[in-house]
Length: 538
Image 1: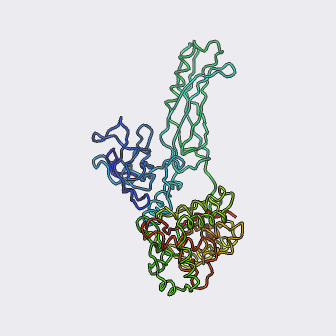
Image 2 (image 1 turned 120 degrees about the horizontal axis):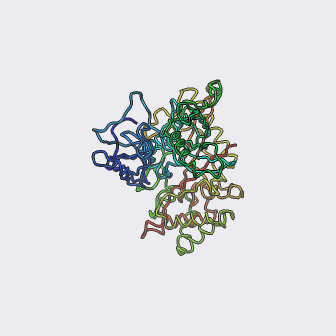
Image 3 (image 1 turned 180 degrees about the vertical axis):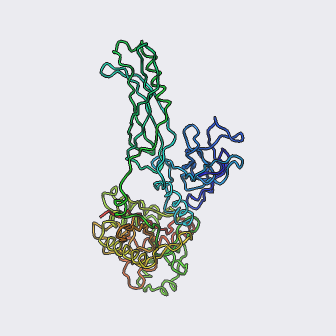
């Protein structure tokens, strides 16, 4: 955007984070070494910036001033991480009589950082800020279509049908013209005329139309310029004249005014446009030492989050365990640690599917419980548990109910997230799906039921779309993240008649978590399991 020019050393701020570590930002580290401002290389689109996390990249610039063909970067321009340039050269300010917005790098060229689940939970408000700025870089520019930085790139001789041709390429960068649209340039080519005395004059102009297609915010057109009508054999003798014509044509100025206008206004109106997007949630959790801890609405954690606490018989009885349950726990904890680990791992392996790597998910989950130190564990969108949940009737019913709730909220209030700037999200009322022990026997749900079961938290990314013509509203859910505790509570030891102690491995897990790690509390720690789901388009 117009303002002080950014140079090497100018600062930028970055709202991104890596886990619990904020990126903060840093100075611009790269510029155009052949153009200096106050003795420092000037920054442009594509220049690198120092950051606490991975290096950042300037993704916006001012199109009216080009340095080595690239728009100059100024105070306020955005970076790939969603950051902003915050300093520039106060005595070198760029601008124009009419307001000119910044141009963005092509979206497929911007190195957007990956935002993990831990990043999102640890710094939700900062991540929202980063994502909002990143979305601005992805959005199509608004305003009048423009063409800038026209360049004649190359010239070469070709022979076609005994004619000598000069082939030159015109490249231009575009603003607010989507990929796939056509652009037509009108180029004035000088025309030589020879009188009866043999004198040559260049006082006429031929208008040549060149049409190309926009791709990655630029268009390239190849132009074949015909020399004087000579046979192929006379190419060398007449080369100088043809060069003169070509150079004069190349020095003419293409006109950007002849643009093919996309869809009519009527067509644009009869469509759904995005009017809001954001995140909604259900459940409560906190971040502690970089780990996600699921808590209740009062901020308290359940017993399945305790570890190395060695509960007494009185405490076990007070929390619903019968004499038989207590006897079973005492007997199980007397077994060697290696035996209990093997029993738990084999149980998880047996409930795993062959397609995930012959039980690999169950083995990884068990190993993470043994030595992961309580760190978060994620099943990504390509994992078997994610796909099982995605394809289940309960999840599809949940999505349908959630869309209905959000649509009703929007129709009533005109907005879903009343204040997206706060570190809070709209808390949904829709019940989360539940996959009980019985579902573990279903081959289509066994991993989801065994590894996750009762879901305790949810984050969902939504979009509200509105038809410009009919005002019809619909809600799309683009991503769902479920959270659950992987830990052993009172019920896993048999409390309150839940009979979960008869599930192989649960009592072993209870004893490992609460008794077998007294001398090394980093072992057998509970943790949060995340399941990242991309809803199917159907």
